[in-house]
Amino acid sequence: MSVKWGVIGAGGIADRRTIPEGLIPAKNAELVAVMDIDEGRVKQVAEKYGGLRYYTRVEDLLEDKQIEAVYIATPTYLHHQQTLMAARSGKHILCEKPMAMNLKDGEKMIAVCQENKVKLSLGYMMRYHTYNRKIKEIIDGGKLGNLVMGRAQLTCWYPPIEGAWRQNPSLGAGGSLIDMGSHCVDLLEWMMGPVREVFCFTSRLVHNYPVEDTATVLLRFKSGAQALVDSHFNVPDASSENRLEIYGSKGSILARGTIGQDSTGEMVAKIEEQKGYQAGQRREEVREESIVLEAKNIYQAEIEDFSNCILQGEDAQPSFTGEDGLRNLKIVLAAYESARKGRTVEIT
Image (cartoon, rainbow, N blue to C red; front, side, top):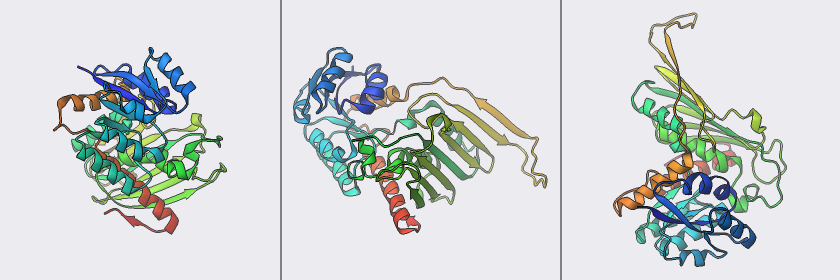
């Protein structure tokens, strides 16, 4: 069996990644229709993927009786209304991140989906990365001991582009922090536990647009552990390491290239056997292991997982729920509040 899908917003990430890498190869999904307000673009996308049905109005796509689930890949300010429309049409929803412009809209999205008995998930596909899942497995197995520190980095070069909605705060709700840093926050909380408080700096250091091109966030978790998020629109792509680092009382994990849109990367685990004090801080008893795993496409895994949830029936819950998306938005918006007010903000 396969779930019949439609796409709302056929450009950008949909055409670049989620359709060709996720919806087309997924074993339990079938893309049947696409929608975009740009008729030339949507027609081209429909032809590109085998003569799909195409629409230029959301309402028309949602009236398509064959469609069971929709992937919403439009600018953030449209997520709320389009999710409500899809839910009231009985469609299950995978919506791109961030969830919404504000918490009130996110809460409404969850409520309407529940009222209409449809499933809601958000596009935090980096949880499906083979290496990131392995890191969580190692942490959950206690091999790192008590977690003390983490770092997640996602940077790129994103210069001013005319009409770019991610550079307009009224369309995207922010800049590098909410667009890329939200992935980092999600991975760290998924691996290290609930965040208790945040402190944040944001700046425009290179690019002249109204959103931040630089964001640095300090997270403190309920466990007492701390983590750093650095997310920038002003670092050349070839220079971007996109690191994920987790440190504990028994060792550390250092990963590179596992945060981003690619499914590849590399990872080293260092586990220390000796626990005694050594003034010279030189350890010969460290077991260092380069972990090599088979890459599995994160977009395909995301689509297959949500499709499987739909096929399992009404009681099945997505791996990433609407509540998870709302939680992430709450932390990111609290980080913006911290940057504005220059103080720590608690997460309740």
